[in-house]
Image (cartoon, rainbow, N blue to C red; front, side):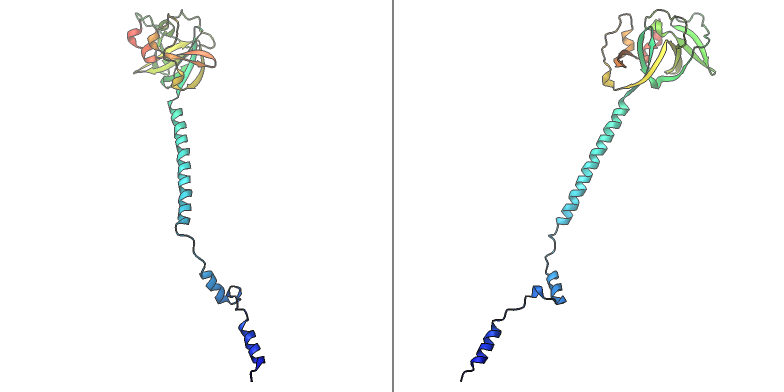
Length: 219
């Protein structure tokens, strides 16, 4: 005789659902699941690091190039002293200037060239005083005033000074600001002029001291 109660009991056990291991509280099961997690794709982390490094190098190089460019621009600037003579504004490179002093007694030199005013003593050093006005074909200078100064320069192996009506200021300009072919007064020595530029709204004549103070032109 068939025992229906036993058959039903077996059928009921056979239809029970299997345990889901992913929800098991067994620690060993959890470790197995963690160990089975796939690792990051090889090379992704290194590529990200390289990208950041490349970006840093590019930006650092760009900043360095800008700094070098600005430094180069500063290096090529002309630093000039501007001064006035006979109502005209002139400039010379400041690197040639030794000192700027107030007028002092002048010792005349017999039979000296007409462009040589005389000599002065500057702390024991003999300085030849030349007449820039004469060289630039201006009229004779009036009496020295409160603003009159002697600009002492080192030209070659000789220390030379010249009188100006007034010292103005030191300016810095780029070489391309100097116009190479200026329109100047016809009585001035064009070969002694490097060009003209504007400083504080005024037209300023840049002198070439090497040519202006060439002994062969002191006539």
